Image 1 (cartoon, helix red, strand yellow):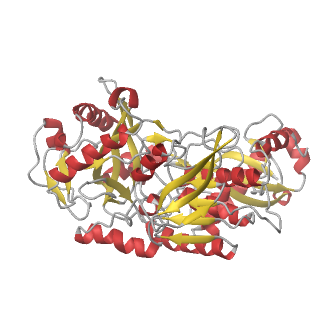
Image 2 (spheres, rainbow, N blue to C red):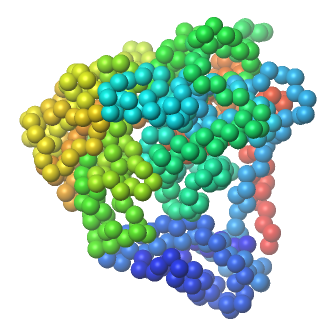
Length: 562
């Protein structure tokens, strides 16, 4: 089978006509007769919107041909005609029928922990999963309790519970990570098997949305359990047992809040970026932790139609394009970088705190993306050396300080502080809303956002918004709404791991993983990291090496069937 890149069709073709048009495009591109094209499948579909009046759909296609070898020889050297790579996932290890070692333990059932547990279960290692929060439907009820009644459950909310923070998000299933072994394809295939729309396998920026994720996570949980895995909710780990063995530190088990001890030599630490108490306990136990950069800022809301028109011009509203998104970056004169983060087309701004007396914002969309507003984080990069140099956990204190300030500015009832963009740029507090109605629940209090973030953030964002307006006309519109604060963009620490076996640099048997450990950012990259860690755990339990898959992939890449 051959893969053809950059096959382009005009946006106006309907999906039914696409099949005919794509077939004609393949015949013309390869200069073959209709009878020589045996099969055609879409691998990826994106679009080129640089000319708004003439937007093109851009396809990557896999084709089966009658005279494939001869055609490939004719196009040898053409980077747009290649042999279709084998993207099927191949398990790197299998547990023996009789396996006497202690079972691997996974802490956290967000995307990383979910895929670590699923992959371990599929390989026959019967993992035990410990999740401090509740099952996803109970957790959803608690989350709505904050949004509708201003009642926070610190152990069951947007951050904690089955599915992790990604459950209440746009459900983006794409990232910019390097993925030479196509682990991302396994993530997508598992989601489709659990009920996700099949189109996520080929659209260029796939997403799912919260409501679909809930049922999918339940199906994946059932799969893990059917394969011998054990999932335990409301099981908070409060201590780590570590022994000195021949001069090396070895993890031997964990202690739960109820006093139970679970013995294990293989622990996947997929705790997410908000498990601040666990970060503290890890440091107390001597696990190596280092500070890392993250960002802080606000959510901004515009009418979705404004973004659609700016990005797609006369093609705004086309069903094939859907709700438009954006990605913006500005390097401010004070040395700070300002950028859009986790843009949610047709979505809502949500309350995402996990701690009493603090306000945190995030964005969420449903699969349909039909809400009236577009929202995104507008955040400013900060670094440990400049902004919190005193302690490796000082980034947590930094986050908490401004989350507490936002709670006070919002009225101390989990309402969020908000300000119109026009007032923000003019340096005055807002007292009323304009044409854009903010979506944040439980509600907003109009105020001055300079109370909620450092001065350098205010200065950088004030400079960035007019610059962004030059890229998206209307971005700095007076009535657009800023809501604060966005602090949980990523983990403020890295639980550093070795490159050769993915274990902690100073504690054998501890496998830091995902966003909380500083090795992922979003559902896709977290899921991929979970698979990598599961492979590392399996090989460690069997006495193998992590590098096996990489070495095999290099050999495979050098081979060609023609």
